Image (cartoon, rainbow, N blue to C red; front, side, top):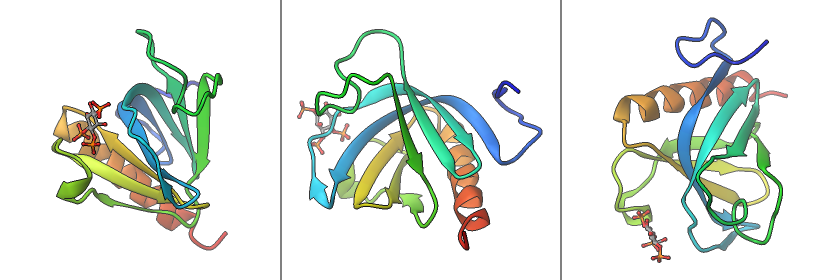
Length: 128
Ligand code: I3S
């Protein structure tokens, strides 16, 4: 079934636009590259589909794939500390394999909803 944007019947499914940048990969800091992304949460899988309106390669690093998927199992999410971004309402998502992402929207309600959904997903799949 197609993921409908808010309010979703299934709390385990959510989608909508978000800005995302990778900040750490394999434990190493990488250069920020904010991108607008259509973001889909299904179970413990979070998928970022490259937004329209140009932009360079997905997540930098020469990837040409239009989508990027991460597994939230064993991850954590929290408000990003101030030194990580000058923007307000930024989430820091830490996932396996030493990857850290920042997620952000101008709309704090949007970010709050994602925070809840990501936390729910992470706790629901904690023991898998
Ligand atoms: O943490 P940084 O390096 O100050 O992040 C900013 C940079 O990525 C900047 O790009 P350039 O350094 O290529 O000009 C971005 O435009 C900013 O958005 C980044 O900072 P914020 O605080 O917006 O996450």
